[in-house]
Image (cartoon, rainbow, N blue to C red; front, side, top):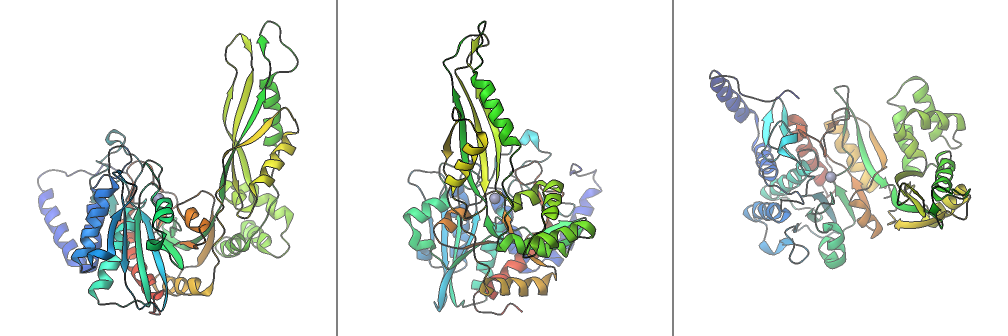
Amino acid sequence: MAEPHIKGNSMNLVLVVALVAQAQTLSPNQQRARDIFEQLININTTGSSGSTTLAANAMAKRLTDAGFPAADVQVLGREGSKNYNLVARFRGTGREKPILLLAHLDVVEARRGDWSLDPFTFVECDGFFYGRGTQDIKDGDAILVATLVRLKQEGYRPNRDLILALTTGEEGGSDYNGVEWLLAHRRDLIDAAYVLNMDAGDPVILSGKRLMRPVQASEKVYVTFKLEVHNPGGHSSLPTRDNAIYRLAAALGRLSAYEFSAQLNEITRTFFQRMAGLQQGQLAADMAAVASPSPDSAAIRRLSDISPLYNAQLRTTCVATELLGGHAENALPQTASATVNCRMLPGTPSEDVQNTLSRVVADTAVKVSVVTAAIPSPPSPLTPAITDPIERVTKRLWNIPVVPVMETGATDGLYLRNAGIPVYGVSGVFIDINDVRAHGRDERVGVQDFYDGAEYIYRLVKAVTGNGGR
Ligand SMILES: [Zn+2]
């Protein structure tokens, strides 16, 4: 981006005019959402020097000030930690099981020297809000808090409890994971029919155009293996045919040539089907072909080759990520090992993948063991109870297609899915897929995209709690 700066004295007048213009155009609900967003960005919640407790307390105060009973607003977490979570409950009629609204409060580290601006000072400039967490995911935190305050002020009565959880540890810098902790210690507080997660399913802008509304309903399962070779070693002046590094290298060579077979599921099939409608030519034809009941293998081949993302949608992947070996430049290696990280299609037993690795490596001297075990994360069913309100609100506000997606990475959704609670990633804030700055420098979101997201989530929350969303 161009460095935001104020040019000369005449800028004061321009600033005043801009501020007046802004004050005139923001509705009270937009102003409140913006204030909450600003407050959150200005609180450092990094693992190193920040605290999610500060942010959780600030949001708790917003809710109690709006009339939530103190007993329904809790700031809690692992004892002694500076990173607590907020859990609040908006009581409904109880006709249906509660819905959990989820976002994380912690952010990735940001160094002042790496940025054009102070990452922990909220700045609006040229149509964007800047600051660490503007995109991941304090926009979502602010929108959820603003939504609950707005509904409270309106005297809204949902047909079920709405639970808000703003948690710590999603980015890994915290001392523990808030969702995992809440499930283990206070599941009663967050137990729900399903979860709307702000941290996934960002609506997509491509080439300046609002393209689609993804719904993240599934994620691949993370598992890591180690390939290891041992050898007696010896003096490097007397090499032997059997060498730990060569054996490992040969094994990795065989692994690099291997590809897991393509396998479609309900979500990826619908993904390719809907994406076909947004593409043209061969790409559109190939997407439609892989979505058909008997997928065409040539189409699978072309899609796999054209993009790592499509390839990752189609199959389990395993890739070497780290390498270690030997202990001295003048000694034969006694050990050589490689880390192999796999992202499995949901429902794949990790033993199957481990057996496949052993078979592909085809050398009993190469030991394959688990380094990080898989946490199963079953896909969340796309039932009409969830898809209908999303379709309705999306059509009404944006009129773009809703596309179910399987995330190739992993989010906090996995702990909840593993605990039997379906999770749908439905962020309301459009992101330009060619300007993704989450975790990066000068993180930002569009000002209008933020306000539109706040309106979208407000309407969606009403739509899933008894109001039709029209
Ligand atoms: Zn995030």
